[in-house]
Length: 504
Image (cartoon, rainbow, N blue to C red; front, side, top):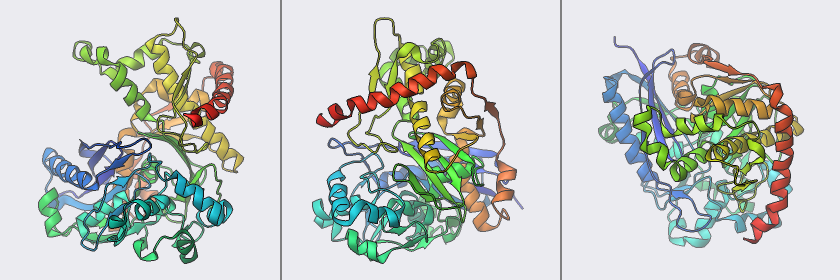
């Protein structure tokens, strides 16, 4: 019998990642596929779920072919996806409109109204999260008020991973880890709250059945198999939130363990076995049963460096082949020559407003301290330090909420930068362990499929087999004083500019 494999699909913000793993977590084959984010108006950020599906089908087929894998060898499929989608589909499963994504803030006025009418405390008591425009809740009501022709035809509202699971199996579900996007989700009981549905004005029938993340919800249909190259009948599990699957893929499955996120967005996830909510942070269920994740989610993560490279690294791209080093690698080199603290240059990484802990859709990215002595290297390092300062802000907020992080397990593309990871260690004062950072999220999705189909006896066995430390960063005490001063200024800079940002 040929060796069985697990397939993980990650629906990211800028691209999908697909990887095939063996039982020990080794990557047999992997690939990516890009798609667009659309910004039709200020404050809007949306994507076309049909585009996700087309790109995923193509990428799955390419990955299977590249790895010389027989479709019959795929024993199970797990899917993770970006947070807070609001995909409206009709009874036939047709997508009725693009979905606003987690960066979208168009529904701020709806949140303001609901917080006044229902009460912020009442909403928070049920949901364990403050009502913000980034979440799914107000996006549904935005359809009602602005796209009545769409709203009138909604059968279900799906999340990113549940939409792809539906396209693969024909089953519409809602996994428990993505429940936190809706404020009618009871965070203590993991059920829909009918009373809060009525108060918010969200029809209960719009919400699919809540299922465990590792539950096999269906099997690949004949139609889906023809499109993506999988074998008809392959089991598909519900999957979960990308940050949660990345947390699993980084080996975080015990209370107190913490994942540090270095994808498009930044932040952290602290594993809890007791309910601890704070309106400044984000609380959701882990993909691992009976656990929560207290999360800090920022808009500025690896996306900051991608933005900087796209806008300011034409020269580095032009000599990449000659140097034998990518443009991002060259930016790392020039940033390494700059001392800790970037000679006083500070960067606020609020490139799409900011999420936790400030929750300000009007916040803006800022370089502060530019003068004629500053170089491109200063700006690159300041970008890295700004993202790390936002991480510290969330970690310190979590500590105030009673959740202390110890060692951080890093994941995402940013963890490939030794400099950036060391900066995060220095600024937070935390030891950072790096497992297989590029594959943590897809590995987490694949582990869900492995547990759901019986390839693993449970999560302890899965993590022991698949997650291995590749390097470790300890905070440099020589930089502590510099970064403590920078953090104090970082906090003051936002508070000083907040009123001006809002007036713009």
